[in-house]
Length: 438
Image 1 (tube, helix red, strand yellow):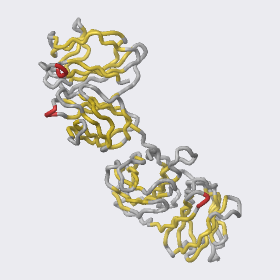
Image 2 (image 1 turned 180 degrees about the horizontal axis):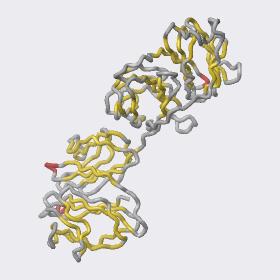
Image 3 (image 1 turned 120 degrees about the horizontal axis):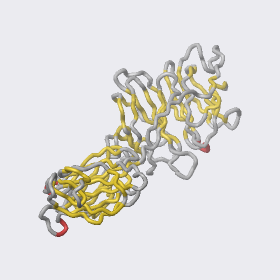
Image 4 (image 1 turned 120 degrees about the vertical axis):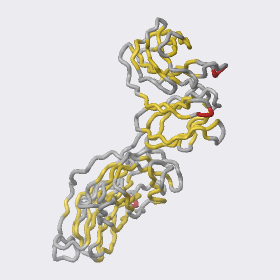
């Protein structure tokens, strides 16, 4: 259920199939002179071979491969018998269906289900463009997937298509052209099955989003979402790929705040985190995620933020300031490996009542200069070794904190942050914390 799929655009250039025209004077076959109904076939039967399609006994489509649309072709209106057989063979007939086609209307016939239970799903298309809108619909053709909702941005987002079951095709909706992130959840649930990469839809275009394959990660039929463009020939599509995960670390840096729980989209991701500890990096589904920091074991939210996480990126979220003013500090972490013989280190000033400071060596050489509360440096190359550092009031020789015996290992990446209060006692006294980022 947690297969995460999302959009990676790869436009289909051409189809290796033949539309064989039938006698134009026959009422039984394709009519190339007068297209009284426009019909296309989409092959979504995941374990079926490439197929031929016959209309009223005459071959209309040859060698239609799995996942491909035949494109629209003219078929005479009225009752039409459609037969589907393996490509190049007359038998077995895996689909034998009579459909009634109306003049001047457009249809999509979807070969759905596993081969053992394959059947046609026939839907009427609405290909008329709306100049200032895009039109989108969703076709659920994945046999082992439950009924689903399609939502904007995340499992907590606005429902676009609700409770669509296998073999159902939701009606077209109109949306403004632009970039969208769609998430798939089980019907009436916020649990994410899939979150898609952002996709750009264009005003005046008409789209059918088709889910095909299986959710079973052990077979050879991966779940794929494919977007067909219904305008024009009806054979162009955009494939969807997994959005992927980001990685986020939460650091408790509020000196007088109690232990906290971390919730991502209202699901517990970590509990009982005490000052000044951290969660280490946790995988987070890419896209806009709702992050909550609650007092441990309660529903009292002390920090809440919607954060846009990019796949494959790393982030640190610091809970900072005194508890009465607690807030998040989000930093994107550049974990580029250090050059041989070096470590990378950065400094973050997180002592709420401390002045601006410099970080120096004991002989006064400035390593990180002039950082005020909530300010931070980039990860900086330093020769691997052991350092005796000092925290000095900015621009002076006044040492407020000694940081002796700090070992930076070859190839490692570190965050050093000032913690606690000036004048604080016990766990809240002024000090420094070191995080090994990588």
